Every structure is written in structure tokens, then in C-alpha cells.
Amino acid sequence: MRLLLILCVLVVPGLAASQESRAAAPDAGMGQYLEHFLAQPPGPDDVLPFGASMTRPEQLSGELPKYTPEALAARVEGRFVLQCTIRLTGEVTDCLNLKPLRHMDKAIMDAVKTWRFKPATLKGHPVAVRYTFAGKYTLPAKKR
Figure 1: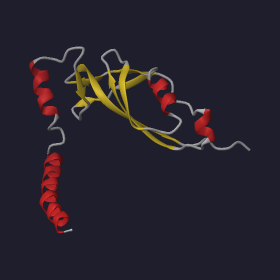
Figure 2: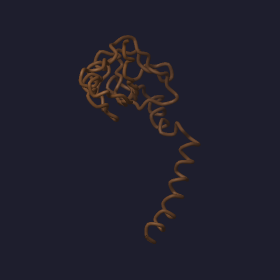
Figure 3: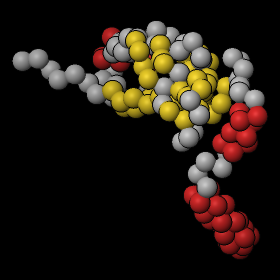
Figure 4: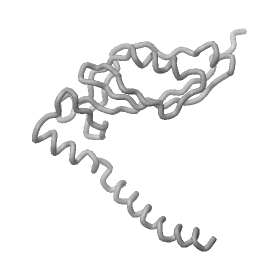
């Protein structure tokens, strides 16, 4: 028990300090990418993490994920979170399901494959980015 308390005292102040430094410079991780970008724009295969100094990608087309019969029968509601790459072409690729939604994963992934975007921009130049998508599903109201 004493060991646990000692570890908490030693570790927690370090965590607080690192969180404060992150809060003071929220875009610090983008610095290295921005410096590299200013020296030489990224190539078509380079993917940057989406950051505050970029314009958001704009969805141009694509289907919304529809409730599956299994999800309706199981009365599934909740949130999903995906992290995907939006390419310079606007195509969405390399999706990672960070927060799955039971009985809906395949429907969500199939819908995402149809999405097309105007790419994000950095300093006025289009860039491929890793982008996080989140959505919420609520059961449709019952018809009377």
C-alpha cells in the first residue's frame, strides 16, 4: 500500500506538469511537420495528423450509415469513433475503429468507403490527413 502511495506522489506531479506544457502549446506536435512542410511541401503519399493550423476537410458526397436489422432488434444506441486517412483525392482510407458500435461496424465502414472530401489544407496547400470521425446513433421514434 505504501509503495502505491509513493508511486502516486512521484508520478502524478510529472503528469500534471506534462499536461500543463501540452495545454500551453496545443499545436507543438505540428511544429515539426510545419517546419518540414515550409521547407518542402508533403508529397501525395505523406499523411499529416490533423491539427489546429489546418482547414477542416469538407464532405462532398457519400452515404450515411444505416441501422442494420440486427442493431434495431438489439435496440443498439450509442457513439462510434473512427480514425481514417483523407487522401488528396478526397478518398477515405485506412480506417481504424476506435470505439465500435455493436452490430453496426460493417454498416459504418461500408458507408465511410463511399465518402468523398475536399481535402484539408495547410498554409493554402491541400494535404492528406489522419482525421477522427465521431457519430451518435439513437433509435428511431416508434410509429404510432
